[in-house]
Image (cartoon, rainbow, N blue to C red):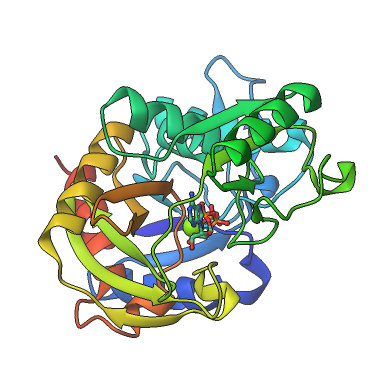
Length: 297
Ligand SMILES: Nc1ncnc2c1ncn2[C@@H]1O[C@H](COP(=O)(O)OP(=O)(O)OP(=O)(O)O)[C@@H](O)[C@H]1O
Ligand SMILES: [Mg+2]
């Protein structure tokens, strides 16, 4: 059997993550093919819809989504449509297109967490620069710092802290793509850290504490990883995964100085290299086995 791994690193055989997935599939007798979503063809020329996937003569039973390359809105919609169509043609897509859509922008993720009653910091999403500035001014006047993030997050890039010392109005160039995503800053105290929990099928696979040099704790920004086993962090991550109805995800959590835990975001295409370095569980294998089990359920 052969399974496509959709990746934005198809030319590098999926990179480190591709290699660990390839091994995990091979352990179950399954061969993988690295495919870029933009190389697929939605073919509606026949009586029945077809999907052209490079190197596949017929539809696979399952597909793993490891990366969706950035592009224009039209390109991203088309790439997501490829995943939607595959799902509708009976392929077990992991994570499925709807779950990816729910988490691809931080605004929808925050809404779904809030609606499900999962603790997540106060958040505002708007397009008006004027409205964004009054929110910033009000919050700063009430001594609440804010974090401004790009709607489509990327490993800590473009995430900014707004404090009483930040110049106002915030320079236009700092706003990303005309959408203001503003979130209350969770103050974890002097030892900067947050938690990353990997959840598969509503169960915790591994948890780490990430300690950044500054308040940004992304591994891509140089944070140090240490294994963590706090049960309450895991339980909150499971609640977050359930709120998003997602097969697997990486949940970012912070604890404030009063001890309360908050979900910052949920990633539907999380990296796990840093986490794997501090975990004994084979994370790729847990995902692959979950996908196989769901395909045959
Ligand atoms: N509300 C907040 N309060 C304090 N620190 C925050 C807050 N939001 C984010 N951070 C810090 O910034 C880091 C990056 O933010 P976040 O996880 O929301 O986006 P991202 O990692 O850039 O996005 P993605 O994971 O989708 O690439 C977090 O790991 C955390 O250290
Ligand atoms: Mg993050």
